[in-house]
Length: 215
Image 1 (cartoon, rainbow, N blue to C red):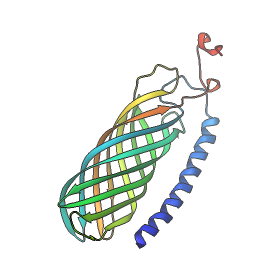
Image 2: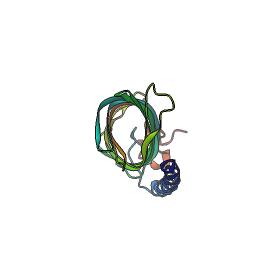
Image 3: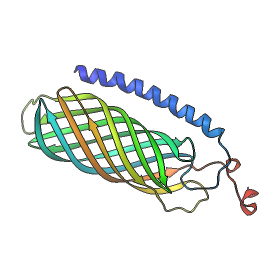
Image 4: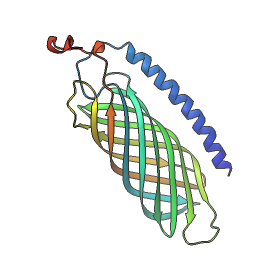
C-alpha cells in the first residue's frame, strides 16, 4: 500500500531528527551547571502497558468507542533541570463493531516537570491505523498513516534510594490524535510503566562532604 511506503519514509526522517535532537541534548547536558542530587536526572528508558478507549472515523462514518490496549517503549534524557527530550514507540490493537484495528506509532516528545516528579509531555511523529473486518475471509486492510499528536501527564514514584537516578513506577495518562484522509482515530490511554533513570555523574552533582569524597 502506498500509505505503508509513505510511513516508512516518515519514520526514517523522524529517526534522524530524533537522533539529532538527543545528540544536541547530550552536549548541552554535558555543559550544564552542577546540580543538587535528585532521582529524576540523566537518561531514562521505560516500558509499560496501557488501556483505554479508541474512537475511529472512516470515510465520514463514525464508529462506536472501541476498547484497546498497547505497549509503549520510551527513552531520552533531561536536557535542562526540568526540560527533557525523548522518543516514544507504541503498538497495540483495538476491537469494536466487528472490526479490529492495529495501532503503531513513533513520536518525538518533549517533557516539562511541573512539580517534583510530575511531568507534562507533548509530542508529534508518525502513526499508523490499520482496520480489518473480523470473520470475513480475505477482508481488505484499510487505514491511514501520517502525523500523530500526543499530550499526557505522568508521575514517577522512585522505589530505589539513590542520590541520583534509580528505578521508578510511572503511572501515565495520555491522549493521542491520528488524523487521516480516509480514516482518523482518537486514542485515550491509562497505564503504568517501569522506568530506569541513569542519574548524573558525581562531577555534575553538588554533594555534601560525606558523599563528595566517596569512591
